[in-house]
Image (cartoon, rainbow, N blue to C red; front, side, top):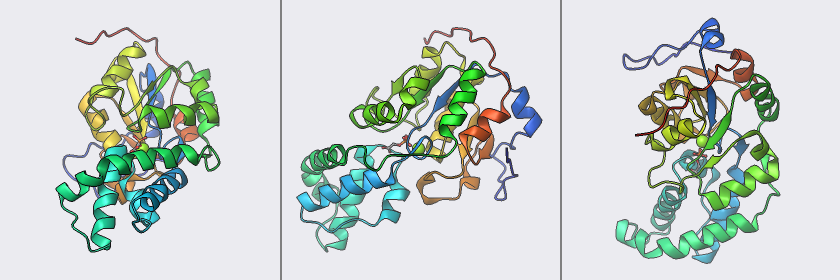
Length: 262
Ligand SMILES: O=C(O)COP(=O)(O)O
Ligand SMILES: [Mg+2]
């Protein structure tokens, strides 16, 4: 396990937990983000957005822009990319111009994503090992992603990661997505765990903000997308190189105590 002090520490950021604090955390359950945490989906996003661009006769978006925009759901990604591509093509790119193209863009994006199939799917190193360790330590787990269910579910099934997790809360499962705490609170309730005893594992400030608002402890992976910003800028309880490292850092799961939502 590697935990380092936050170089860009600001007053509002909580101090990182020490290795002994991680092993002593009385955790009952784990929630997992998907893109940038379990699976490197940059190639899928790239293929889907290329299909969208081709359908709308727009240029292809740079992969660096995609990497900076992943994590806030498909609608946000498509709107952001459309704005940039229209601007690049020296066409009107205000909100009205983007909305005029939004529906056909989303349809082409989904079709492109689904046509890309599972050819590019890359589960990050240490994910399967880490989930296996977490399971053997007694942690019930669920996925909370901003990706819509029609894209997230086949990915989890094809990679076998669905076997480790009890449910998928997708970006369109509820009206609210991360950084709103609502999907995390639902996830805790489904795992019969209290938020204070449920670890959120993610790759971005969006995951951490949702976790803080839900009062869940939060561990951030260094390898993900984080909107193009260094992970050390995220207010989290620790930064890790792999899910295997997180799993090794934790002690055994505490018994879950059902906390019905009001
Ligand atoms: O923005 C997305 O589509 C998904 O993002 P997430 O899995 O990191 O929540
Ligand atoms: Mg993510």
